[in-house]
Length: 382
Image (tube, rainbow, N blue to C red; front, side):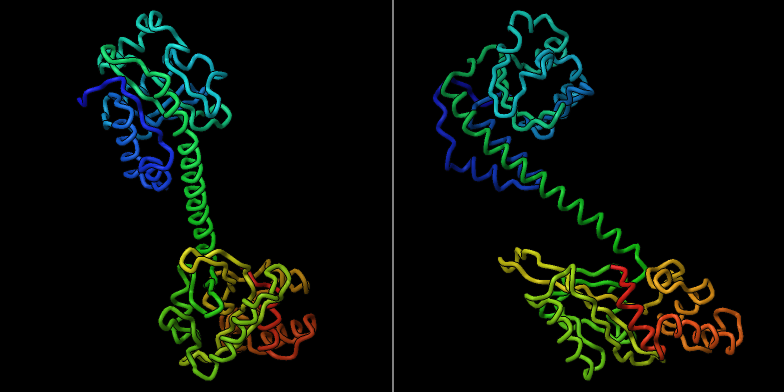
């Protein structure tokens, strides 16, 4: 064990410890290293960043130095019997307090908590700083010394209090990173459950995000491909139109909530029907890579293979299509000919033509491609 003495603790502002606190981010190893440096700085037996719930009376050591699984487990086991947590009012964010301010040492040694946790691990003196408080949940930093070691003096308390705001800010940043990461994963799951392939691209058509179905949409058979990280048209003759549409969607004048989708038909080599995609503004995001805001567009493959029959989509509801007409329009907008749609619906081609004629009348369209484009403008899923 490192020798302990009541020497003055150097101010923490602008030193390496503060840097390490703010640099820890969402790295568990980095936070463990921060605790190790705090332990060394304040010359204590055990330092722990922990959480305690006054609602459930449960607690856990998140990071500690030294890493002692038995001691951390004991802290959780004795959380409901921890006499230092009898009053939730004492744990205000930013407060620094010694253990004997909450319970005298004379009373402490009479408790099961002392006999079962502190004594076996050689702990006695405590200095606690409240890092964050969220309703009944408190996050705190505990420093512990043994009974034969000096109590925490005024200068040590002052240095500890100076460190506490940095820990509060760093922990808040960690939570925000965690929240953002978790939200991104949730949104990715939502996007990936949708049948249509979707991609976010910047003004240079570089793919920023793609659903699990996106790589397939960029194969030549779908009219798109990826070339050095950029989305390009499979047919070079179509690429200028594609790039111009992306440029319009990512122009400074484009508003994500107002600008209508642009619907394009692209040659799909090897396919009987062209690929139909929509491009619309997706707003601006900050890029850590470039250090500035960049505007994005969302590219959606409208007639990619889909399990969705569009029976209740906005297009069907807007024009009041019957169930048979809805099924027919679903097949047409996903690239079927009248003959293949008739086979899929198990009806004659004359019946299929009749359904399509009724759809044309209701939607005021005159061709299958016009119908596809109208559907794309009304029923862009993402």
